[in-house]
Image 1 (tube, rainbow, N blue to C red):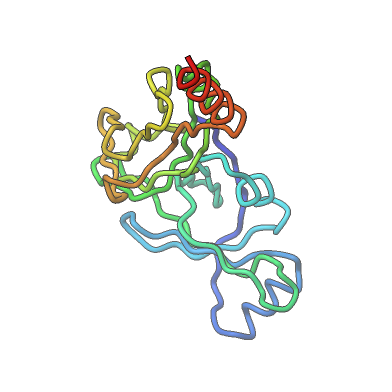
Image 2: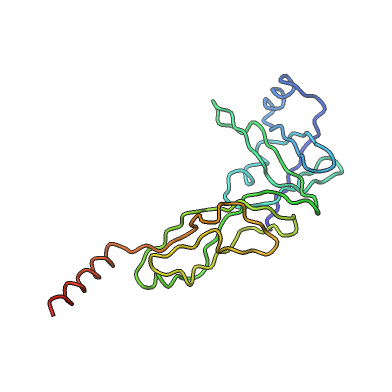
Length: 196
């Protein structure tokens, strides 16, 4: 599991004036909740670049003085005018507490439907899940080897130990559709068969 370390400073002052001061120093005000206490801190905006602007699921280790918090990204706010990061919420990972996160989907294998001339269409990029921190993974692998032409793999087909998927079970994740070329070949073959 990829982990990004963020070094920040605890916040002692709150309110609009204090928050504006933090942002003027190119820092982002943040909060960590979900643990024994709610922790308010700030850190340089640059420190969040690899955590925020990626599709990968990562753990953030937030170092504040002598303490380190293992967290996941929960919510981001951007300035409506400048589009700069204006606030981040983190959820602290507590061993015996389930956490709700979004994990990216990784399609693995070569589909039999694609080998037969179909085209793979990815319909869902990530799954919403609930799990204890020890079961969190970088991505959820979905095997598509047995995915046939004109067939779907749905959310309900995915089973991962220790992870509860909260998306609607009937939502398709990937499907193999017939390509135009394959359709033309099939209709040509049907016409030939009728002539004989």
